[in-house]
Image 1 (cartoon, rainbow, N blue to C red):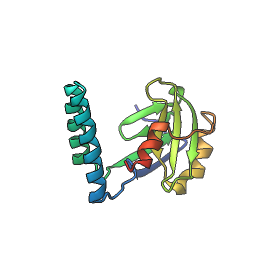
Image 2: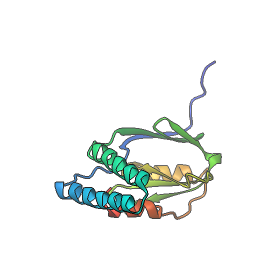
Image 3: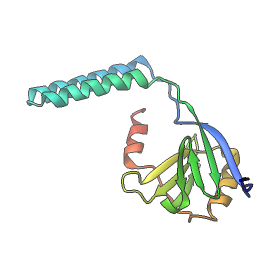
Image 4: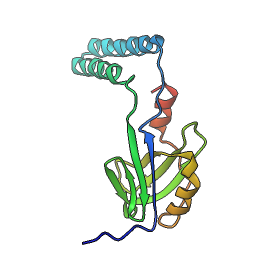
Length: 157
């Protein structure tokens, strides 16, 4: 069976997340804060939480300076694909093109409870074309990054 050609397909490659170079001071600060919280947890009798904090911090330090992988993004008439995950339009409530950041993002509001906002890196040269395409399938509605994402961004994660 021959596949019917798609009327449109917008594709681009982008990094999974914004890469930030971290100084040794940043690592010292994270180490001191996490060790202090772990010691306080142990003093208050919650040894498991203290161990969990130390293991989590160790894992964070191992992976934080790894350069992000490139992810392939596609917008088609079936939905938005980010890497290996496809998001059909019927699972998406609305979208917003966030171009105020140094690295523009496509924010998709999902109808899923545990994943309310999907953040997709956006190629600035394709922003207008993506906007014209998405408005045909889902409404445009202003969104912003979640409070947790804003907090992590402010802390340098």
